[in-house]
Image (tube, rainbow, N blue to C red; front, side, top):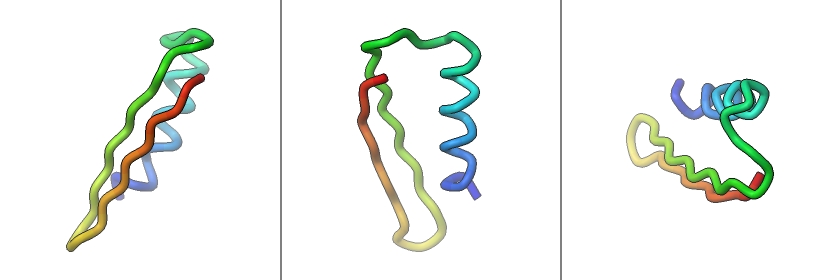
Length: 43
């Protein structure tokens, strides 16, 4: 599901050098039914 892929995608972005220290990442995910999640964090 999309929710399970989110940590993998974030890891690829960080390891790929597409972010730098101090960047803010916002992620939003949703699933079937009434499942949703959001997260904001600083690298």
